[in-house]
Amino acid sequence: MATAHPMTPVDDLIDELGRPKAGAPLGALLSAHAVIKGDATALVLGDASLSFATLDRMSNRLARMLEARGVKAGARVIISMPNRPEFIAAMYAAWKLGAVPCPVSYRLVAGEFAGMVALIEPACIVADAATQPGYADRLDVDAADWAAFDESPLPPAVSMPGKIMASGGSTGQPKLIIDPVPSVWGPDKASVFRPAGIVTLNAGPLYHTMPYNYCILPLAEGSKTVCMTHFEPREWLRLVDRHRPHSVNLVPTMMSRIAKLPVEVTALADLSSIEVLFHAAAPCPPDVKRWWIDRLGGERVLEVYGGTERIGATLIYGHEWLERPGSVGRAVSGDEIIILNEDGQQLGPGQVGEIHFRRRALGPGTRYAYIGSETRIRGDLDSFGDMGWVDEDGYLYIADRRSDMVIVGGMNVYPAEIEAAIELHPLVQCCAVIGLPDEDMGSRLHAIVELPAGHEVPVDGLAYLAAELERLAAYKRPRSIEFTHEPVRDDAGKVRRTQLRDLRLGPSA
Image (cartoon, helix red, strand yellow):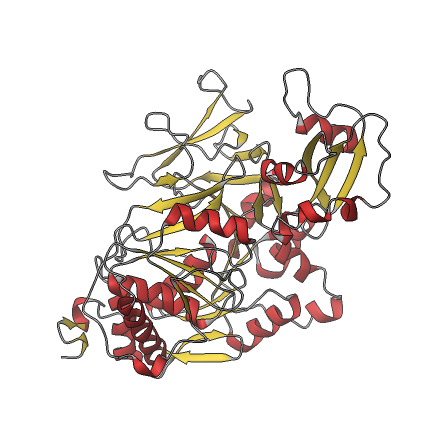
């Protein structure tokens, strides 16, 4: 009988249809597919094309590199680098040791990255030249002596928790989401929209949840995963034509950039292989959504509203959305949407309040936890903090995604962090950051900066605040700045961002 490891028969991990068995460790599943599929392509990423056997050997070597650095079961491992095969190998390497992988954006500036390191307290940081230097426990995948480490499979191991994902916090401070489910196959990892043995195409950065679901997990199902190093619309079309993916994941900014390519380019694109287009992370412009529905068909375009915490989710197909434009769908099976006012009273259809979920299927020990933030749990209810309402048929509409948060190209940006950086300037009295509409990115960051009375308004605001803005990752830096001598905060010391936005766009914007 073939084995993924001398102690683990493949039949114990994968069923007769090639699907993972419940309870199979994720690291061992990659080794099992390496036995079954061998030289079949597992991963295409940039110029690299790796078979299941090659990817498994890379992961085994990397696991032993971590082990040599003292990484043991339960230890946390930061993985921070651009999209490249070693990122995915490092996720599986951690699981093979029973360690906890913690993907973190390599785009963070030094202070932000240090904040994440302080919260995670990793045993090791797996990185490359793009990641912040200066950490003694940093394993540089480009400088490592790969040939010095054994490539054979490791004994089965399970990580508990299965992973820790980084997210923004409503205060602008680093926040981490602990996934309490161990690194074994189960209902939390399977999806009817992503069956085993297919081809997936991922366009997003691997440290986000949707790429995790549509690039990293499919490998445990024996699927071929195609991953972009970075998103470029023409290249995305080329990869679809070349690899014929079944399932793809995009954010609305990506969808918009593809749809706005010249007609002579998009008219020739063959998108017929795509059975499922998942999009999430931000509202999709109606004209862009209709373009994709026209191209793929409403039954193939799925919008999801949810989060890494898995407190609840909604789903809507394209044909449903055409009947209810603006809706993000109804609660998935097992979930219930509850809208509450500020006093915690349940509201009826059409009334705007905070969106809460009741996840009936949630069992003991399966609720997430935060590091660096407090949850919004109320008894058996939980919330992402968004405002919205439901119609008579239970379809959810988002009124405001976290009133302070701005979504830029699918990335969550919290004004408090940006305001704090700008207010370090000695002549800045106060600052408020809001999101203004942007055709490409969905929203652009606009800073309103209060200067002392009588102080001359700078001609170039970005240059004036250059030193302060350097403290922020590039995607968090405002694209426009206005200066004022009027108070930005009200008498209660509050920043009324909705009011500030309405004054610049009008209440109907």
